[in-house]
Structure formats: structure tokens, C-alpha cells
Length: 494
Ligand SMILES: C[S@@+](CC[C@H](N)C(=O)[O-])C[C@H]1O[C@@H](n2cnc3c(N)ncnc32)[C@H](O)[C@@H]1O
Image (cartoon, rainbow, N blue to C red):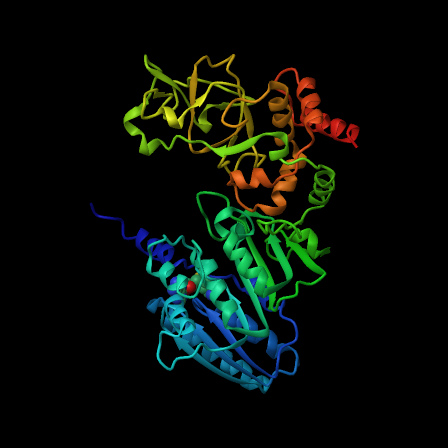
């Protein structure tokens, strides 16, 4: 089949993770650097057409910050953009000469990951890794599989990460001198989720966070993905002592918008006893209210005797056992498409997904005994108002002995069995409330909801959940009614 030539540049761009920074964003990033040494060794890894170095240099030339010289090192893999990069560097040179600053640059048309990993690991004879005083980065964004060349290279220097952008940041961090500064724009996905945990630990152990900036507008996300992905900008300094306070700022992402800044204690951004090291970004006033409410809760899921797991039926592995319609020898199979407000609508004949799965020796271990379960979607769509969408699986409505929950769902259970009804309804009310949604948005910038995220939340105690559950007669309440119920019961338990 002939592929349309118009999609070729786009495909290439995606393979390279090439999304160039707009000039106002690049200038904003450059404005975040603190005082710099007289001679600045600057790193721009994944330089593209040089927008970031150009913004950095323009800022230096505009004011007298005592910088006498800039030695820029640029890495860029795409041969088609190198001419534009050279032209930008020559323009930087011209600007610097006018401002009385010496400017030297070296463009490496090479793979930053491969080359720097080898140099840091000492694999390249005589080629010690360079050191930098400052780095500015918009690294490429692409998943890297565990047997890829990039993963192997990163592993050789002790970096275990599943995305190119975190690989870039981990290497850049290693190349900074103590006190060296990094301003980066990246997806927000590293702030939570189990896959990025080793990266977060590495990052927070070696970089002191000084400032975080989030964009509120989805239009500002220049990396269009199948799931909503917010971008953040961070300013960090190589060192081991996190500050007592840091600046969190936000803007709409539109041109010329107002930037709102607030100072937060660092312990509100990364909680001291959080083993997951989630990075919370309280950008909206409603986030602060949500945090206050959540801080008043002291139960964990474990203390409630409840577990949350990812649905066990991975459909493509059990293809032969799936059935479009229920038939003899099958049991219900639930997907997010079966969510219908607060309860499930099953079977759904018009759905493209199968409604049933064979119940036999092979499939039984992926099924759960029927009971009251609370389900949440693992991926919400951009259009949904809330990130967390919970619904009840009620055995009174769907009669069966066993049931299958597909992998795109998380389910709450008691040691593999159903939950006590009023507790399940209480959890339903709590997880569908605005307060939990707002709290969730402090640490999650995407539409994915991991079981770990749900496990780390604080919950009301059992009595409060049960009385909330008993007060909820039917599961068709409006958002306002759910929120009122939560507010009333959480205040009553104080
Ligand atoms: C997100 S773009 C950003 C470009 C530029 N820094 C900017 O902000 O406009 C990332 C750049 O990294 C380059 N790139 C991708 N993989 C690379 C690698 N392994 N080594 C060096 N550059 C790479 C891409 O070609 C792309 O130009």
C-alpha cells in the first residue's frame, strides 16, 4: 500500500519526538535562570533549530548580569534541521558580539543518549563526560521499550526509565556541576505513576526544585497524544538540599497571558513520607481547598480492608474465550463502555466490545466471584469533566456467579471478593466528588488513573464511608448532590 507523502514529515517528526518550542515559551524558560557564572558552559540537548539557546542568549544580551562568555554545546540527531540550527547559532554569535559577550558553539550531530551514556559509563576511551553550568531543554518525548538500544545505554549508567524525555533529563542532571541549573519543559507524566518512580527518586535526590510552572490550557500542550498530556516547565539546581519553599506558577498558555505565582512549602509539593515521591502541583485555589479536606482524612485503603487492582482480563491474550453476546458457558465481561452513570449497563448489544467471556479452567483464574464491586476507568476521555469516574457493579442487576473485569478498569475489592454494600456506595460517593478530583489534579497531569494513584489517596474512615453510603439511596445523583453529601459527612466526622 502506498502511504500518503503528506504524512511522512509528521511520522518522522513523531519518531524524533520533534516538537519545537514557540518563541514566547522559550523566552519564558530563559527568564527562569538565577545568577550565572562569568563563563557559562551551556548544554542544549535535542536542540532542534536552536530556539532555546537563542532565547537564553537574547536574555543575557539584554541585561548586564556579569556573563562574559557563553560556550554552547548542542546535540541534534536530525540532519534536516542542522542548517537551521547553524544559522540560529550564527545569529546568537552576532547578538553576543554586539553585547560584548564571547560566544562559542559546538553542534554535535549525534545521538545524545548513546554518546553521553557511553561517556558517563567510561566506555569511550579518553572521552570524559563534559561539565555544564546551565542546561535548557525541551527533550524528545517517546516511549522506549525495555530492550531498545536507548534503554540499554541508559541502563549502563544506572538510569531505568521508559521514556526518552526522562532519559534526557537524567543524563543532563549527571552532567551539571554542583549548583548548575536546569530549565526544562517536559510532559507532566513523570510527577506521578509507578513507572516514573525510579526517575522521580533520581531527580529529587540530585536536583533541588526551585520552580514549577503549569499551563492550564490544553492548547498549550503542543504534544497531542491519545490521552491529554499537560506540559510543565521546571527550574532546578544541582544539589541535595530541597528548598523550604518553592514557587508554583501557572498561566493559560495563550499569548500575553497573566502568570499567577504562589509560594508553597516544599513539603506540600513532595510529601516527606510519600514512598512514591509524587510531585504535587497545587496550581488552582480549589486545589488548596481540596488538600485541606484530604489532609483531614486518616484512613488508608488498606486500613479499610479494601484493595484496588487493575482488571485481570487482558482481552488480546484471551481472544478465543471472548464472546460478543452472552451464551451458555459464559459470564459477563465488563469494559469501560459498560459504565452508565453510576451503575453498569450490561449487556450492551450495540457496543463494539465483547459482552462475555467463557468460564472454563483456563479463564477462571482471571475472573472474580460475583459481588458488589466499585469500578473506575483507567483512562478517561478529554471531554469527561472528572479524571476519576467510578461506578458500581451490582450483582442484583447483573446476575452471574463469576464476572470478568477487563484491563482498562480498576476494581475495588475485599481480598478478591465483593465489598459490603454501604461501604462500596460510600467509596462511590467519595471518589466521584469534586474534592477528590481536584486533589487528584494536584499530582496527575494526564487522563490515566493508575491503581497506585488510588492506593496513595487518603480516605474517610469506615463509619463515615458507610453513613455516606446509606444516605445515597440511588446512584443517579447530580455532581452538586454528591459534593454536598461529602461536605456534610466529612464535616460531621471532624
Ligand atoms: C522536542 S524537540 C525540541 C527541539 C528544540 N529544543 C526546541 O525546543 O525547539 C526535541 C529534539 O530532539 C531531537 N532528538 C531526538 N532524539 C535525539 C537524540 N537521541 N539525540 C539528539 N537529539 C535528538 C529531535 O530531532 C528534536 O529536534
